Length: 55
Image 1 (cartoon, rainbow, N blue to C red):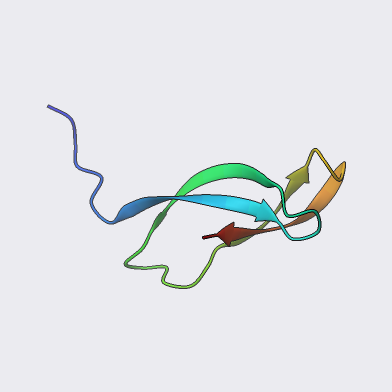
Image 2: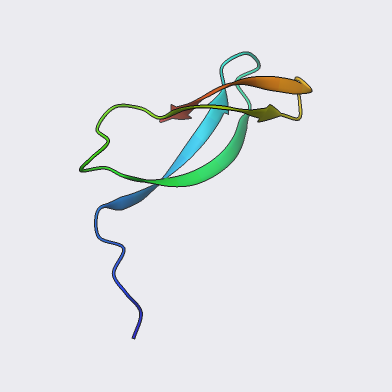
């Protein structure tokens, strides 16, 4: 029997410069109510940029 996911939801991270959706991740929606922001590599911009949670 598999464990429950609970409050974890799948979110998509989009580059703030080119608006491409590059990464998928999970977050706990109960603990983290605001949007995620991560500094990650964008293969379209070919540099590290801020990636923000997309709708």
